[in-house]
Length: 186
Image (spheres, rainbow, N blue to C red):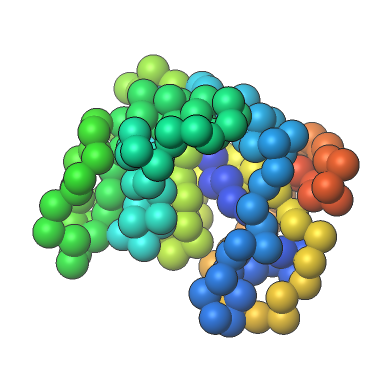
């Protein structure tokens, strides 16, 4: 059975975007990006909410990838090869390859996808991940912690809920970023 993995870049105080909606402070350098690429190679499907999809769809643009470093082009290839499911009540259509639109999060459908997917599933964005956490679908969390505290913004984990985690891997990068891999405890 495939795992559902919540992966995110976040500040030391656990925000994925600051109070103004900025997240440029978490941009991975080449070393971190290459590691992220390796983490996503076995993900056959990505689950997104509308806002995260709108951020991520740039990876489908040949024009944006021209002249980019190898690790950026590598991620674009990994992203394009994966199926994408976008959950949105307001988005009219999707514009990227291998992408389907769902109007609401259906825990049963995601569970069936975990049973049949050829690789792991990645879920991105704390709002969508909150639905998966609340239904017990998340198996692992891959957190990339940037060496900055932003003081507020969009929280990486569902506010007001508790998620018990067990540390299974850690790695420190030369830019001060830290990777923490957790299994979700029952």
